[in-house]
Amino acid sequence: MKKILYFVHGGMPTEKQKAEIAKLGAFIRNASAFGANDFVEKCDAVAGDAPDAYKARYPVVGDKLDPIPASPDVPPPATTAEPTQPEQPEQAESPPATTAASTTAHRGPGRPKNAT
Image (cartoon, rainbow, N blue to C red):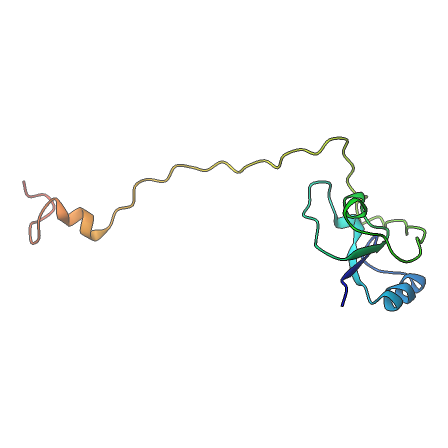
């Protein structure tokens, strides 16, 4: 069975799109949620209003339908002229781990902490 991804804006397909999705046996994906630097899901083909990153890698099948205007609560798809590298989170240096064995090793067993 081939994996076909059908892209719609806003996540809710129209009746016309639902009919094509059923005809293709496709999985629905929200095109508005895809960013320029996002992971491209592996599939056999794409349909609907597929992002450029998908159209560049996979064949486009089915009828090209007019995209649905995004609702006010759905942001428009991100477009950038040049892909950027995601920021790497800063890693704080952590203090060396201390265990009961490491704190008693230098004192010896049975010696109080303040004994010299």
